[in-house]
Each structure stands twice: as structure tokens, then as C-alpha cells.
Length: 507
View 1 (spheres, rainbow, N blue to C red):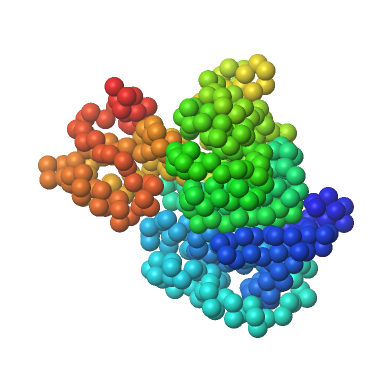
View 2 (cartoon, rainbow, N blue to C red):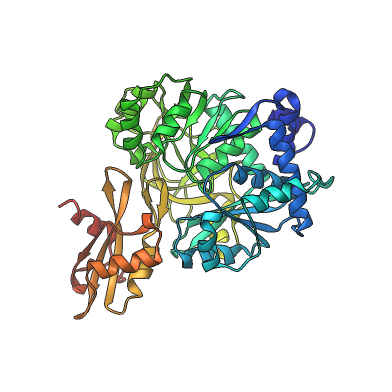
């Protein structure tokens, strides 16, 4: 459906979606959410009515609308309605602790909040922003609204923002990555081209919609004409049953999820409609799990490397064949971006030498919200610098080496050590702390904290309770190792050498 819209000179996501509805898909199933089913025609009607509701509440192009909700059809309705009026949806992470959630809300200064009833209290602890509650209020508002003729006419720039997805920064506080209409459309095209997806291939959105995997690909699926199956989190039996009824293009599987789904698949091997590709982030998954999952699904595993900021590129072009436990995980660079591997002075590194990945291309985000200094640094010399180290091989493939800022990826979520350290160091009895990553068979990686305390310092239970109050569950250290202050290994500048601490975990 994308080419028809682009040939017509429109490059906004709402126009692409509307065209998809108009070219023979009106009665086709667009979204399935439990017992709720919406055809493309029904979804478009609700999206247009919601756009009218938002306009009547004073939402203007460029305004931010915050949403705090689990996965449900209303999430997609809001994103599509926002696309039609030029608003930007800030996708809040419901797993965050109240101080973190408050920061994310205040960062983007939304004019309206959409909140799920179950999360109403959590939201009110963080903000008193006026809102529209999903449920009876939502349905009554749509029922009494008529489509507004301004919908679809308020976005004339493909660089206009559409979503803000949050990603942790080196300061520890989440950053808001602004993703434009252009980037979302380009990501849809990259998905379709590099994963060889057919127009009506479906997608199971089980990862949280505040995660790029679900928001990116759910929208991309609706721009092609496929069915999005909304699932609220990892529910292996629900997902397995959905695979028996829908042909799926990309079946997302993340570290920490494979074991549970494999167990379900072994116990209940329902016939499959067909899967083109499964998996993601192969570097963080045990090879034996890759082999078993692909055997059970009869589909190759995506040896990918991407980010909230980049979408599925830069590494989307390599597949691991079904039943294979990979010995190497070299990746092919996406055809939809240009990649450099550079040293700290931004000079290209030679083949075989580690370099920070820097890239540019149409799937790239527009920058971090209200973070000018960070954007100047990260977008220097016309390329976005990802902060990840790779080596280029002679055949043109690339190998992941390490994360420049010691990013921890746990179960598909990004965690920065500084975020946890800030909480620990706020305790009066802690004199120093460093958080490093450790291999975790279930989650891929998990944080471990090294802590030095004073004479009356806290014990592990007290620090666990502190982290429980201040941090989302997936960010909490899986263990605490107490050491003397002088036992922290340091560089000549006094910085803690984290790689030495990590080596101690394996000794």
C-alpha cells in the first residue's frame, strides 16, 4: 500500500493507513484484541472519531499526548488518530517507578494523558495532567463524536514527530526518542523488504507497546494490510494459539521469553499457519535455545541488531537457519542505512578493529526530546553515533563487540548502570557503588552491584528494598557484592574499571 500513497505525494502515516483501508481492505481484519475484533473500515471510523475528540479538547499539531496503558487496541487507535492531526504520542513505560515516570511525563510536557483504568493510580502519583480514560469514557466520547474534516490535512511535513519512545541515557534518566512519520514509514518499508513480508502477513504485539518492536511493527503491519494480534505481555499459550490461526511475518522473541515459549510449544504443538522469521537479538540468546525455537517453529531466527533510535536496521539482513545452533553471529548491514565504524576522533577504523557504530538513513529517529547537547554530540558529522562497538570483517559483515557505555540489555529492555548507581549512592551508608552486567540464562544479561559501605552501612535486604521503591523491576540488581572501598579497581583518573569487576563474576 505504501507506493500508492508515496506516488500521490503524501508522506504522512495517516494517509498511508487510510489508503490501505480504501484499496480492498475495508472488511479485512485489522486488529484482534481478545474477543474484540476491528476490521480496517471499523478501525478507520474509530480513529477518525478519536481524532475529532482530540481536536475538540484542544490538541494541536506538535502537541504531546501521553499514554500509560498495557497492550490493547486503543493504543493503536490513539497512535493513528494522532497521526491524523499531527500530534505526538509519548509512550510511557508502565514498569517505571513513580520518580522515573514523573521524569518522563515532565520531559515532554504533554497536554493530555490517555490512561488505562488499571494504571490510573500509578499515573496520578506521578502527574495531575488532565486525561481521557480508556473504557466507558473513551467509548462514550467516540460514540458522540463525528469525524472532523481537518483530520488528515494537518501534517504536511514527513519530518513531523509521531511517537516518543523512551530509552535510558548515560545519566541514568530515560531519554525521549522522537520518531517521525518519515521514520515510521521507512521502518515499515525496511521490515517488508528485508524480511520478505507479504502485504497481509500478521504480527503478534506481545512486547509492550512502549517498546519499539511492538509499536514499530504493529504500525508497519497496518500500513501493509495485515492483522495485528494484541497480547498483553508474554502469554505463551495465547501466542501459540494465535500462531495456529494467523500467518505471521515476524514473530518477535526476546531474551528471557524463549524458555517459556519453547516449553509451551513442546507441550502443545498446534499446527502453524506459517511464520516467515522469528526472534531478535541473537547475541543475547543461548545458541541451543535458538536451535530449538527455530526447529519448533520451522522458521529462521533473525540475527538482528537495532535500537529504538534506528528501528530494525542496521543489522536486519542475516538469518539463522532452523535447527542451527550458531557458532558465530556475524551480521549483514541493512540496505536501508549507511554505516561507519569509527574511533573516538570519528576516523574510520580498519577492518578487524573495534569501532563505534555510526549510521544514517531514512529509518533514523529525529533526536532526543529537549536534549540539544546530547543531539549535537550523537549526531556529529552527519551520522548518529550509537555507542556500540563492532568489528568489520573482510567479507563486509560486522560482529558485535561491546557497549561503549556498558549498556545492560535484560529481557529486551535497556538498563544503564548509572541509573542504578544513582539510587544506591543516595543511601547515606553507601560510599561507592558500581553496577556491571552479568550473563543471565533467562534474560540474556542482568545487573550486579558492587557496593562499598561505611561502618554502619546497609545490608543487601535494605538495598533491595531501596531499589524496589526507586526502580522498575527489570532494573534491580540480581545480587549485591560488598567490597572495601579500596578494592575498587580504578584507572589513573580515578574511574572505576568495570571490566575488571565483570571478570570477577566469572572467577
